[in-house]
Length: 161
Image (cartoon, rainbow, N blue to C red; front, side, top):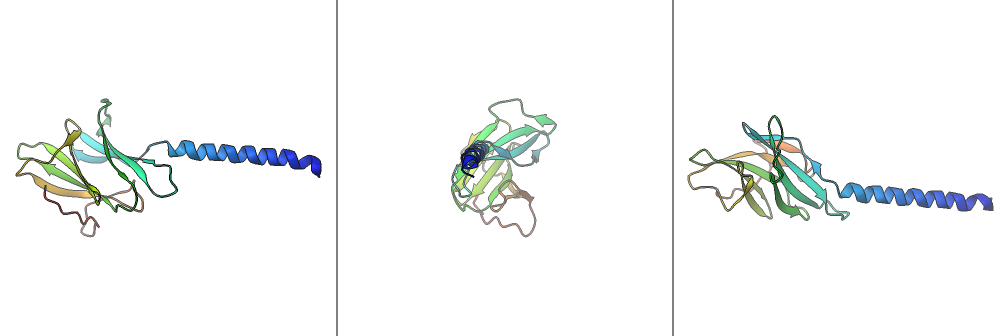
């Protein structure tokens, strides 16, 4: 019995190290939502990466994609505020300026971010006289799940555009 104890402990320890390394490596990967169409040529994808804590805390970013394939511009990526706790749903609004320019608004309890769709860069705010339309929300319980606008969405963030 004594001869088999050491190899079993060695195999068990090696397996534990491999599982731990796999868990750490998977936390470093970005996970992506399905594409959400925001204008005829463009879609967006929400990407999340774990902060490495045992809680549901994520780094978040939005990537632009062409509706017919990936965006080839490496700068088509905007960082959002990290979800460092129970921030609720991430609400998405489509804002159309009087000149036809499209701006996306991402809003949660921590604040709001405006992104110009064509340049795919942050802007301070949408132009005055713009039309704001609620598109849907990414759920708190399943942060990569997008629910299109319905009468019972939970997004309570009614800030002026």
